[in-house]
Every structure is written in C-alpha cells, then in structure tokens.
Image (cartoon, rainbow, N blue to C red; front, side, top):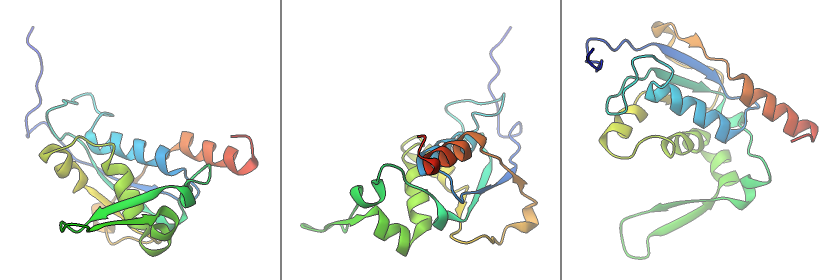
Length: 157
C-alpha cells in the first residue's frame, strides 16, 4: 500500500461564508484558518494548499474578551529606522475591522509562501454584504465560537 499524496487535480475548492457578528476573534480565526488550510478534508497534506475559500462578513461586530481591545497593541513598521508604529486594537477595529480579522487569521497560518497563498483565499468584509454571490458560498456555522461569545456576554466565561 502506497501513501496517498494529493495532486492539484484532486483539490476541489468550495466557498464558505462566516458571519462574525458576536463571535470571539480568536475562536473565529482558528476555525477560519482550519478551513483555509484544508484540515477539514480527508485529502489534507501539510505541504499543499488544499483549503477552501472563506468569506467573513460583519467583521466590525467581532468581540474581543478580557478587555483585550484596549490592552492589545497592533504593530506595523514602515521599513525606515524609527518607523515602528503601535495602535490599540480597539482603534484599529473602529478604523479598519477587516484588518483585525485578517491579522488574527494570518497568525494561525503557516509562515512563508504556502501561508501567503492560503491567506489570498480569505475575503473579509466589515458589513453584512459581500460581492461573492456568484460563487454560491455555503454558510459555515461556528457553534463553539458562538456559544463561547454568548457565555462571555452572560458573564459565565
């Protein structure tokens, strides 16, 4: 018996939509990264991009727990000496909510060319609408993330 290694002909890519309203950012990002990598498929191979496309809507309504929105800093560098800029996550969430979700997912993907190709399949939108209706995306329900955000809102988490 030989080990199965998927080829590009074996890979079929589906489209999924995730509604981020009320979801905890880290739990959302880990599930989205899992689908982008293709770990939900039986043909998963760590050296290939076997994942699906993911559309995240309502990114502006994502939740950060334990006051991380005000405590956590987001860094970027211009490339010049002294060019390091820091910004609170709450400010970035108000200004560019798509970037907060994209950065969280990016941190959970492999580093290098493989991770960059996976990240290209992620489409994030701040509002409830998206221009990808022609791809006929399927709703991806994240029950564990939604339950955790409900418990955090109730004060149980």
